[in-house]
Amino acid sequence: MDGVALTLDSWDMVARVGLATLLAGLIGIEREISGQPAGFRTHIVLALGATLFGLISIHGFAPFESPTEATNVRLDVTRVASQVAVGVGFLGAGAILKEGGSVRGLTTAASLWVTAAVGLAVGIGYETSAVAVTGATLISLVGLRSVRRVVRHRLARKEEQAVVRLLAGADPGLVVQAIHAVAGLDVRSVRIERDEETGTLVVEFNAVVAAGSLEEAVAPLAGLDGVDEVYVTGAL
Image (tube, rainbow, N blue to C red; front, side, top):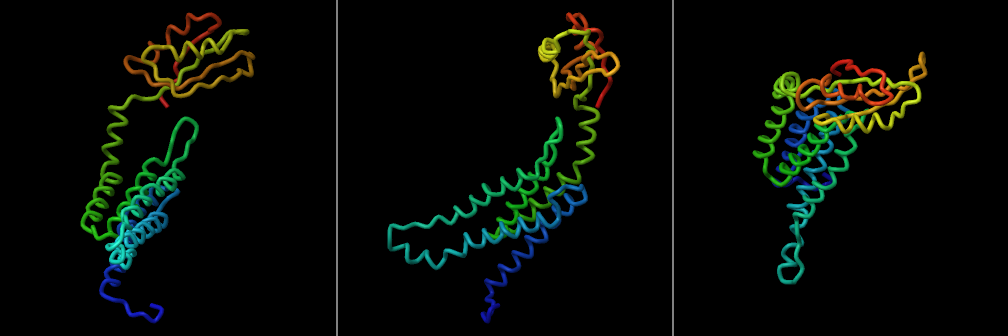
C-alpha cells in the first residue's frame, strides 16, 4: 500500500478490521430487518471507526513510548478508547425518536453502543470477547422477542384510555388535577378536546392502573362538579 509492503502485524490488523465488519454486520442486519433507521451500514461503519480507534490506541503511540520512558511525560493509551464510549452516545441519541407519548429507538441506540464496544474490542485484540458479545447481543435481539411478547401480553400492565365529558362552563383544569390525584393511577397523557356537536369539552387520558380495573379507579371522577359522564374506551 503506497509502495510499502504489509508486514505480518499489518495483516493482523486487516484481519481485525474484517472481523469487526462481520460482527457488526450481523447485528446491523437484525436492525435492518426490524426497519430501524440505523441498520446494516450504520453498524458496520460505527464498528470500523471503533476498531480503528482501538488499533490507534494500542499501536499508534508505540514509537513514542520509548522516548517518554526517560522523561516525566506519560502516555495514556486508554484515553482514545474512553472517548469512543463517550462519542458513540451522541450517535445513539440520534436513533431515539419520540412519537407522541411513546419512545422508539432505545434498542437500536443500545445496539449501536454495543457495536462500538465490539469494534473496539476487536481493535485491541480481544476477538474472543467480541464474538461472545456479538452472539449474546443477537440472542437478546432475536431470540428473546417471543419472551418479550409473552411478558408484555400476559404480565405487563396494559395502557387504557378513559374519557371524561364535561358540562358547559366546567373547568377542565380541575378535572385534570383530579385525574392526576387518583391513587394507583399512572397517567401517561392527557388531551382536552371540544365536542363539535355539543360544544362541551372532553378530557381524554391514557393511563395504567396499578391494581384493579380502570373503571373502578376513575369512577369517583363522575362525582366532580361539572362532570357529565366518565367511561373507559378500552386498552390501547
